[in-house]
Length: 259
Ligand SMILES: NC(=O)c1ccc[n+]([C@@H]2O[C@H](COP(=O)([O-])OP(=O)(O)OC[C@H]3O[C@@H](n4cnc5c(N)ncnc54)[C@H](OP(=O)(O)O)[C@@H]3O)[C@@H](O)[C@H]2O)c1
Image (cartoon, rainbow, N blue to C red; front, side, top):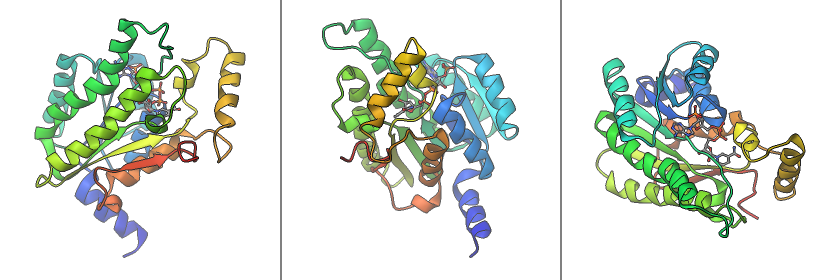
């Protein structure tokens, strides 16, 4: 079988019908949506900012529907499921990707910060999956975007790292729970990736540069990841190329979580 035939076989079995990518209007989610469409998928991208969704739709160009919503609100998750059901009827890949980084040391951490982080990155993925599961096809793949930080200890990341560790745990539980449904669940754990999330951690360009330099000193590959490199790993987890992976963690982290 040549590469093209192999790609078509994989697409036909797992990728053509509908992929839902939360946070698909920026960074890793947007790059993943672009790569999925290149591979023959139809994608539903979500995010809160309509203007960014419109830009993303224009960039992706075809086979894409944008669904605006805040995934921390259960009624917005219902809206995403309803849009997928109305337009395609089924979903074959879920990429639970939306996230934020807000650093807080234990001394300054507030309840508001805790709830914001956990609502988006620990609670929303559970209800996203719950609401989309009835639409999911056999052979489907769920990709939970975690982080290398789920197994690292970096000051200021009490809540962020804990939510990412929760995702790692969901993948294990659901891999077992979905036995018999022919649905695979894995986490994808990026290392430091050059996306707008880094801007949100600095107030000046100097601050951003010093943050990046701090990370660079820890990364064996010696540079940040490009969002496309993480998207390539998502393509792998979404396709039958990863047909024997479930409950596992794919670390596309430039080695930062390995040394
Ligand atoms: N970049 C890194 O270094 C890195 C490393 C490891 C893991 N990750 C993880 O990768 C994922 C993607 O991050 P990124 O780097 O691509 O960041 P990004 O460019 O800032 O994208 C974050 C996305 O999440 C969406 N989002 C945030 N809050 C939301 C909400 N309440 N409801 C719906 N959507 C929401 C944003 O859209 P709206 O603002 O329009 O809602 C945006 O599309 C995150 O889970 C992050 O933790 C990133």
